[in-house]
Length: 319
Image (cartoon, rainbow, N blue to C red):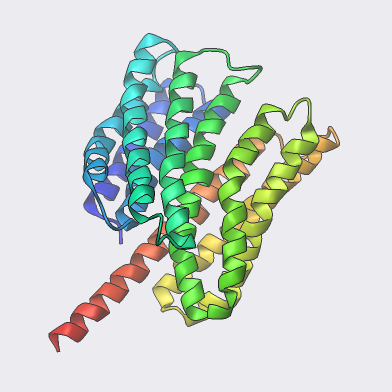
């Protein structure tokens, strides 16, 4: 399921975590760096490997990705400033190449694009915003009244919620609709709200201190369709899958229900000016569960499904 490059990325990530534990006092910001680098080294390659119809921008982006991810990891060991920015720039270039790949897909396919294609196309383009926020964080430039953690969380948001989630959803949604065609109109509605969610949440983060109701509304708008999608998949899709894929995707959907519930609690508490889950606990509960539960197991489940399908097709052709 995981290619050699993904195992290499996982090994490099473990080295990064060990180095951080040895050299740096661990706080919330360091945990965010760990989750972000896991996306760079493991989750982004797994996601890109699923996307068909590869072109030159895809090839350049995937060739640069391992080097750029390592550079980004190195940048996290430097104080904010010019050197840190220089090490972060290769990742920004990588995300721009991925975004150009998505944009060219829009140009080539806009007349025949279905909702599954649109989820992939916009997901590919959204990631470049995360690359920009990485460079902004490494520069140390003050952005509005954002703390360092919020700036880096904005970057992580556009890698996970805006890139990995819609692309994973495109492939899982195709499986769901194939199993239960009656759900196609509902899936289109769910996908629409998921696609407009990332910029809406970004606006909620920006104006959250002065307009907490906006932040909560953005969380509800993004979380609700994902929760509905998870429940539909658990009811209609999971029972029809092979054991290995069933286990992987079940872990992914249950993790998503848990992580999205914590996001809802955080947003609701902000409205009432109470602290139920602060940012440190949110990074732990929402961040780690979303990273290793929903994102990793979801991508592995989709990859396993397609590998099994390809294997069956090859066996049929050889008979």
